[in-house]
Image 1 (cartoon, rainbow, N blue to C red):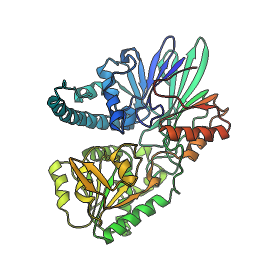
Image 2 (cartoon, rainbow, N blue to C red):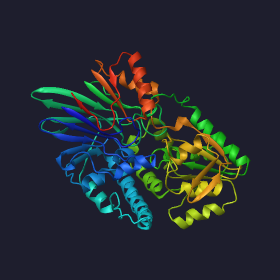
Image 3 (cartoon, rainbow, N blue to C red):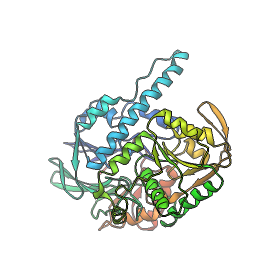
Amino acid sequence: MEISIFGAGKEVTGSCYGISTATDNILVDCGMFQGSKDLERMNYEDFNFDPSKYKALLLTHAHLDHSGRIPKLVRYGFKGKIYATDATKALAFIIMMDSAKIAAQDTKEENKRRAKEGLPARKPLYNETDVQKAMKLFKEVTYDQEVEITSNIKAKFYDAGHILGAASIQVEVTEEKKKTTLAFSGDIGQSEGIIVKDTEPIKKADYVFMESTYGDRLHPPIGERQKELLRIIVETYAKKGKLMIPSFAVERTQELLYCIGNFQQEALAPIINVYLDSPMAIKATAVFTKFPEYYNDEIRKSLKKRSNPFSFPKLINTEKMEDSRKINGESSPCIIIAGNGMCSAGRIKQHIKNNIEDPKNTLLFVGYQAEGTLGYWIKNGEKRVHLLGSEVSVNAKIESIEGFSAHADYKGLIKWVKNFSPAPKKVFIVHGEEKESLSLSKKLDKEGYKNYVPALGEKITI
């Protein structure tokens, strides 16, 4: 058996792994590369495998860096089934359709530049028709039920505790009557999540492929994240400023809405307008209301007080661009939640451009900022940044709450590995910047686990 690292090798995005035997080829995830321009150009490169040869794809969850290249995969010949939970399927459709629209816009702008330089036009990465074709291949699965992928490969999905419907996947491969069990972590969530349940352990695997997004860091205590959010809201309001929150449309936005709604309901925070300025996040939030079976006990209890845990009187959804622009004329203190979470695209860039030079305002990061993104540079102290054709000074207060991360820190990752009994023969560390992956590798060495950090394009024989 051969495992190919088609993405997320010494890199935190682009998750894609191939499992190949003498009789079968399947994929686990097929995500978008995100971050620097060099990384994002990789999305336009040809696959370094033939999509038509793969019989199935197991999708851990809907985030773009795990699902974003699936329509391209279909465009280039993939016709197998795509296995995912029902919530993942619903969210992936929203995310991939949004990605198709962005691809069309980006390609239009890119081709203007190419025309000036006498270069040939570039086609969009994929379009909405490709997304619709991909959706027809989805087959819904439930947690903890064994699924026959081929006559020689079986899979079982476990609740990863990361976002709604997210899974870690156990794959059993039979070759010449010998069974080998693999485990793919997907993205492992923090314990005591605001919305979803805690991570469900996988207890058996010969070889493990695990994420390392926060392989060198610890998150602050779980209880501190809501206190910090409340503090920042109150302090920004006292300065009569705007609070801008670049947020991922799936999970992070819903966590923020739940917390802010609670603050206002309990009179802990000022009653001010909260703009959800992201069409994709608005659609994703509607999906979240349809799957209460994935909620943890705390949010289930809250349903007695708020039938919709993600809505409250001062929440204003701005789907149309003209409504988004009107927010710039808002003179009263307010909260703006907009995509995307790394400030590399979306409406948040316009809000930053219009508000970051005013010291009354605050820009709050509540998620991972990949190296090379606008969010990364601002969070790391840049005083002047280029965006939307202008250079602006960073005068607003910059805040960050690491506790809102949907990823486990290194202690959480090690705890997840320790659930395997007996210990895996080897742990392969993926989905992390090289620094984070190598840091986690050293920690696993100390715990006695044989491990290895594979590179992008590497093939591992098992």
